[in-house]
Length: 265
Image 1 (cartoon, rainbow, N blue to C red):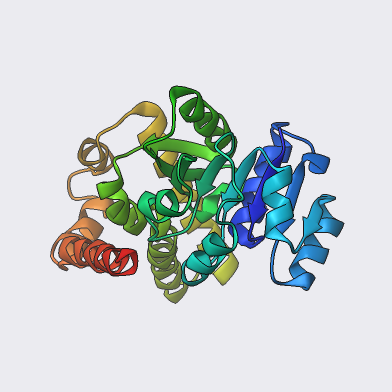
Image 2: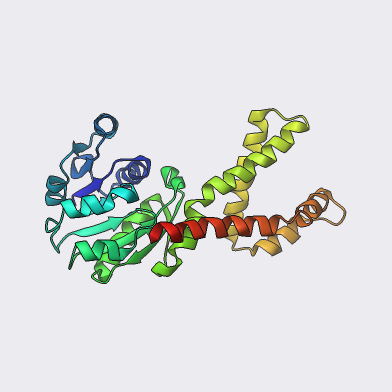
């Protein structure tokens, strides 16, 4: 299976590393194109990949093609590849804000899968959503699930949910890191070092997420279980619950979702 990546940025790199780690394919079966010769040199040296700057040759030599470029250059690249991607190829798009229609109008008859991964796929803990284009079959769906499973969990959604999914899972790592950092800074004020506070905050966030996922707890039930009457958790919860943070976080998702809608137009 030959896999080509049009665009060799950080997300493409993370996906490639996962594919290699899980033995989905070998380095010699991956081709990457990018406008940056520096980036291509890095990928060639570090991951032993084949690199190229000609997208037409890349699609000719690839069975599966990932589009991982900036949204603003997609139209130019699709125009360049007009008529060059045959119907036996499978196209993946990980471009934020670009709908299936953008590809299907330019690549008639070609199966397209839209994917929105997030940065934790760098460590195999990504959360990806995907949807299938009108030419994608059950076989294509199986291929998508096999690839996405190499770098985390995945969820099939209808395309109309992608803007809010992008807000929560795509942008969410930055939001969670912001909250984690706020807790760490608060702990530093009361005597912990930066390293101590960050480790405690990060591991607590990680452990909480794992418990909720692996034990299947409802978050509210979990919160209640952790809270002892008149204890430390209850004291801290009162501050959170009186702060209006629920609305602030909902507004955060709203703003990110609305921006996603704007980008997709």
